[in-house]
Length: 239
Image (cartoon, rainbow, N blue to C red; front, top):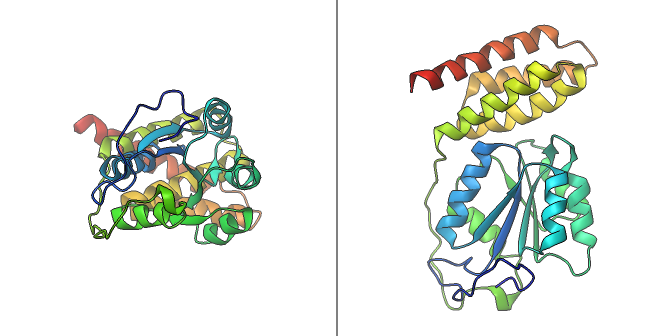
C-alpha cells in the first residue's frame, strides 16, 4: 500500500492473478487513447491509476502523494517528459519504479539515459509486458509470492478515446498552427496513430515530422493532416 497516498484504502497483498495490488500508478500522458490502454492494464493487474495530461498537472499530483510507479510519456504539451524522468530518478525518497514511454523508436535510449528504470514502447497492449516491466523493477518485498503465470492477454482501448484525441488535436490546430505547434501535433498523432493502427494518419504525421526535421515548411502537410482529422471526427457522428 502507498502510505504516502492519503486516498489509498487498506487493500490486500498482491496475488498471482493481480500482481500489482497495492500499487498506485501515475500515468503522465496527454493521449486519452493511450491512457485508456493504461487504465485497462492497471485494472487487469490490480493497480490503482491516476492520470496527469501535462507536466504541470503531474507535479501537482506529486506534491500531494508519492505513487509506487510513474509512467511518463516523453512528448507532452507543456514540455519534455525526459526532464521529469530525470527529476524523479534523482528524488529522495525515490519513486519505486519510473518508466518512460513513447512511440518514437529513439525514445527508449533517451528515457534510459534520463534515468528511467525501463521503457514501454507504444502501442502498449500486452498485459504480460506491462506487468513484467513494473514487477522486474520493484523491490522484492513489493512483489507477489510464489510462481506466477505470465498472461498473454492483449487489451483494446475504446475507440471513443481515439475520437477524443482527434477532437483534442483539432482544437490545438484551430487555436495555433505555427511550425512549433506542428512539432507537437506530429509527435502526438504519430503515437496515437500507431496505437490505433491508423496507417494513413501515421504517414501524414511522419510527413510533417520529416519536413520539420529538414527545416522546411510543412504547411501543405498540415492541411492534409487536418483533412484526415476531420474525416475521423466525421466518423464519430456516424457511430
